[in-house]
Length: 145
Ligand SMILES: [Zn+2]
Image (cartoon, rainbow, N blue to C red; front, side, top):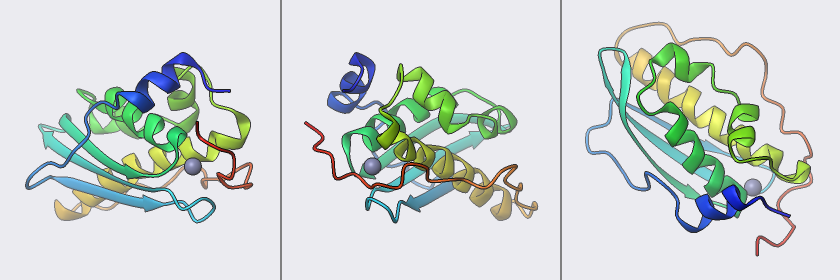
């Protein structure tokens, strides 16, 4: 039910770990299935120069976080802000509909980390354009393997 890309990022997640003295941290949780994702950003001249993540969750959540870190790395904050959960899912060559909410978590983690940085800089946080919907709120009861 998972694409090869998802399986690859699940088996070999990129950018796992922590950044010491990060410029922004985003921690988000998914009440539906209990996934927890923490994203660390290193930002220089408005650009994400390094990113690491730790995710406790299902395979789709881990693959989404891994892909999200690859997508935001090297991007400006404005560009990273525009990365939607759909873009993450597309980069993974699709997620099963029941697992789409796990990619929402990745988008939220990016947004929370960027706003953490902005607030620390004394800047107003950016507003979400659209509320995140955790569609397919069936949870992660499907087996991951
Ligand atoms: Zn999940």
